[in-house]
Length: 212
Image (cartoon, rainbow, N blue to C red; front, side, top):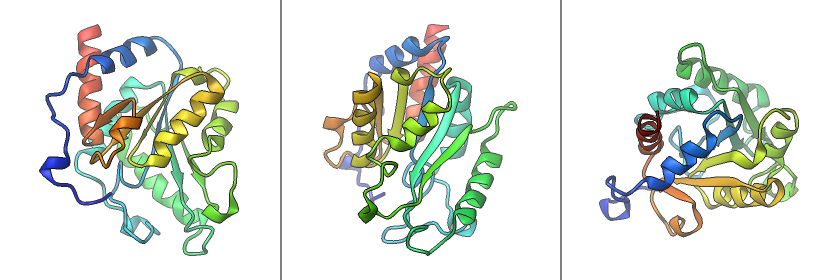
C-alpha cells in the first residue's frame, strides 16, 4: 500500500447507511466475505514479496478487525495473488505456513478463517485464477454450494480486487466491492470505501448493533 497523506483519507464521519443495507440483506443468510491479504491485513512489501512469517507485518488494528468480522460473516476467505511462488522466490508451503499463523492469531470464540485461496501463477500465465479473474472465488464457491454467491463481499486495496468483484457479479448476479486504503481514484469504482479494515469493521459492528 502506498504512503498516505491526510488529504487522501476519507472522513471517518461519513454516512454509512449503505453499510446497514449490506448487513441487513445478509442477516440469516449463508454468504462469504472474501478479503485480499497484502495491503489490507498486512503491510505490502513494495517491489517484493512476503516470503515467510518473519516478513509478515500486521497492519494496525487488522487482527481485532479480522476477528470481529468472523462474528459477522458465516464464511471468511482470504483471496490473494502470490506470483512469488511462480517466480521461485518462495514455495506453496512457505505461503501455507504464513497462513497458518494468520489463522491462529485471528481465531475468535472458536471461529476461524475458513480458507485461504492462493493464485501462485505469474501474471504472464494469464490463468483463470489470478485476480481480477473470478476463478479463485468461483472455485471456492463451487465447493460450497450452500453459500449464496450473489451475496458475496470482496474487500481489497487494489483495482484488481474491485474489478474482481465486478467480474464475479457478472457471473453470480452480485458481489459488493469494498475498497480499503487511500482513494487513488478507486472510490469511484468501489461500492464502499474505507481508510482501513478496522474502519470497515467498525461500520459493520455499528450496523449490526442498530439492526439487533
